[in-house]
Length: 161
Image 1 (cartoon, helix red, strand yellow):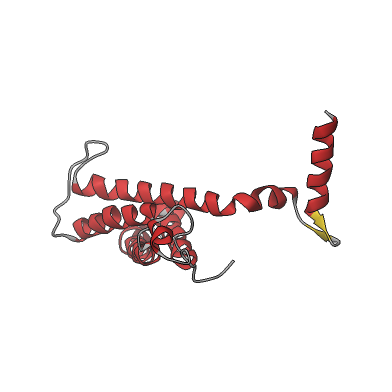
Image 2 (cartoon, rainbow, N blue to C red):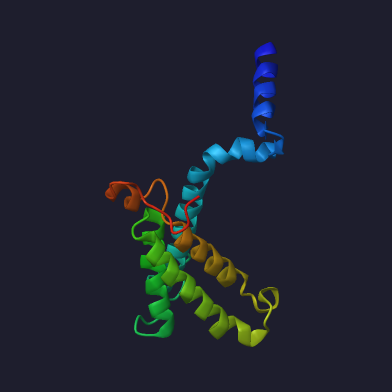
């Protein structure tokens, strides 16, 4: 119990450095930030790829497919390939930028006509994907990515943290 108390005291002291206040969550989570971001990138990429596979192959969910030579088919192709590239961290910034643009187009072409607010026109997912992908495009692939494995200096983000 004494060791736990001593560790907690050290933890709190590191959270209050040079009279600057840092939240305990920042002190605790900051060392895991690159890995939390990698999990976010992987999960978002896989979820996006599933939207594409549903349009192109009808799975998961046994949904009807869309013609490949159509606007929805092209969108499904971007979602499937782009989502996998983002999840794997393969040219993730470029794939995320294209995916962000696709989601902006999807919102304004399909959802905005039914009302501007996403909560009204059921466009929340398109808006969330758009801004998540814009963030990924700006930050880069990060750890646990093919981009990091293939570069000598590691994947660099557009904005250094």
